[in-house]
Image (cartoon, rainbow, N blue to C red; front, side, top):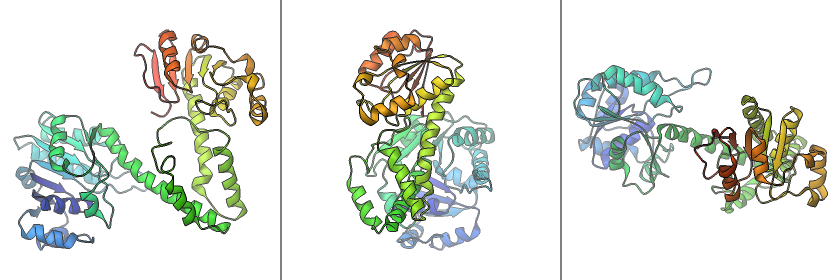
Length: 438
């Protein structure tokens, strides 16, 4: 293909030479004359293992040319990648000046070009940027309509400094945010040969995915460092601890717990987080991330209460009371916390949980519920449908085929459903449905 790349920083320079190496004709575009002169002489503007040799080869072979003329680049190519920077503003927001500027120039060039040209944004941007910022600029400057006259996609990159050529050739997956198959298929032709899944998704999901990935990397590094410092403070080698943690591929290094849902609870996680926080204080080790986890967890409970309050109803039905499906353990269950707060606010609450039988509760489990909601027996209903009939809003804290079938059969079309667990299916006749974190 004939490809133009706007912005010859790290991502742009690496993408340019790798695409040229794979046989494509690439035009690099940048406003910095120093970068352009370096590239014309066969030298890369970045430092990276193998990049200088690869740049020299593709430039001398005639597969890469560079220019500062946007119109020439658009005329000579059929797909453009925009890889300009999005630096932080003083308040933490993204500075989109470079994106706005280059998109105005691209749009003006598209106004004078016939044929379907695909514009692909690769810069890391907040969800909504492509649709709310980029698309209007391109349409206004070109006088054309996206997906009818030109294509528009978002493709996040996963290149790490120091190993970018290897990462380009073996990415974890290729993600394309698009609204038309025509545009997505152009990128499939370019990258479909790579040894990974090629995933086409919505533009917003693709934009958010890059942020989620980078945040997860930062969280993992911070977690390992905090565990390491806590371990060091008690004479334990944190590297040995983390080596063992990573050996668990069922729960630790896995999909487990990585789906948006409701707050955690139970007899282990809350108390162990408190114990780690105390260990840190006792040994003068600050653990800001670990110390904030319980506060973050409480925020999800607050969110559920706020969602109910916003509906301005009085009768609430709660399906599920234990901290997770399949157990009667009520200790530090977020559902118990929600029930306690709803009662305190004067809501008429009714609860059903197939597994929880108050008469069978013993020991710490019994003491916890007696201290939290001593009169809970009067709120429990024997059948799921009894709770559904009672509630103007249904808070679903446990799932499964039986619960879903009961909801389908007994909701009357006037009730709101707030899903805390991710129901597999829902009836479109429900008045309203919303997930707690999705």
